Amino acid sequence: MAKIKALPIALAIASALTAASASAVEFHGYARAGLSTTSDGGEQTCYGNGANGHWTGRLGDECDTYVELGLAQEVYNRDGKVFKIEAMWATDIGNQGNDYQSLQRTDEGGEPWSEGDWAFRQFYATGKGVLGFAPEATIWAGKRYYQRKDIHWLDVFYLSNSGYGAGVEGLKVGPGQLSVAVTNFDMPERVEGDNAQGLGTIQNNKLDIRYSGIPLWAGANLELVGIYGFADLTDAQDDANYGDDDGYFVMAEVSHGLMGGFNKIVLQYGKDAMGHGAWANFGGTESLNRPWWDGQQETSWRFIDFGVIKLSADIEMGYSLVYQEAELYGDYDDLTKLSIVARPTYKWNDVMSTSIEVGYSDDEGYPWEGDYDQTKVMISQNWSAGKSFWARPQIRLYAGSFWGDAAEDRDDDGNVRFGAQVEAWW
Image (tube, rainbow, N blue to C red; front, top):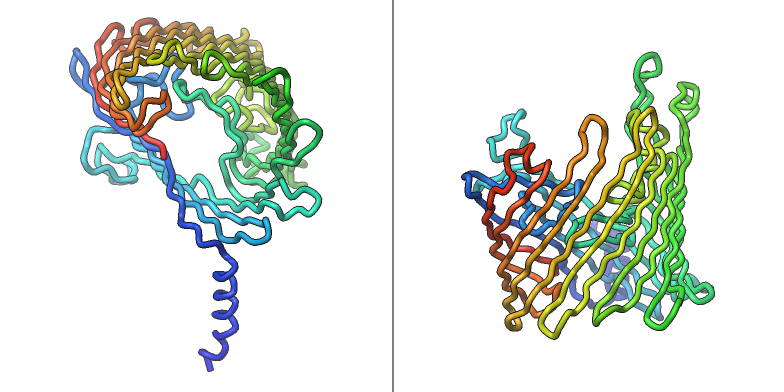
């Protein structure tokens, strides 16, 4: 009897498999890992991993092992309608000093080389060609990296409204393409004193509208982005005065060809609930119904110019200039940050190259952190899977030093570091 009841289910599964495409599973990801030492002995000091970014460049300044593993599958392809699913896991280990590294916290019984972190970063589905009025468009829902934009050698994502959401991409409207999405940023309770009533997580929604591919001149186009953040309080949260400050984040980006490569010019501004969007890494991620603390950014703006150009047949250079300012809640001076980085690379042949990364940053930071500047020079000998600036995997040997206030604070000023690292994406 059980077999008879299971028959309709089996037939439905077989029908779905027949409708699905025969495409193979896609395996893709990103990873980095390495080892290091210094002229003074011991592991190298790093000034930016993950959310911090590397404002004087990431070459020779990564002390973690980070791996993203993604799987994707086209599950349906018929009459121009295509459905696809994608999932991604990530692991980050801050200590690169041992063979076995568990995810158990040290204070929970883990060994000193534990403290790894695991995260489920993406699971979403897309459907292309399913809107009759716009067959060129793609709908999606789930958790994903949503049209992120970054400066790779800084590990800075100047636009990253990622997480849970749903939307439609690639609608042909006029000369460009329109994308609309709704995402959310859940925020834990940050109320103290009499209002700390344990009323739970606060949901902050974001409406994300982007219009891209606007032609400017030959080889150049403009993209406009607007994100509006607003709190969705429960009645109990509203009665407890949790706050429901709205805010917005806007961006304009011009992309154009330059010297055999590309250049991007970016201008961003954030206000109120999204006031730190043009200051922090992962711009556009957080929307706060109230500031985390007195001293949070109330407004911010950022200018970016970066690209990769060819200086000759055998020399490519990545470069970036970032300048940003922020006004704070409370009686604090404004913040400013300047970052200038260049990484020229000379290709000896199709697989071997030499890179020099020079970086400078100047921060007029929070009163409790003080002002500091930083200079870095790093050289690396590379072996890559191809001749391009972007060719990966890349196995590199590097050496170099940091100078400035931050290095002095860590007794690292002028200390020479040596290391080997692999960086890969596929």
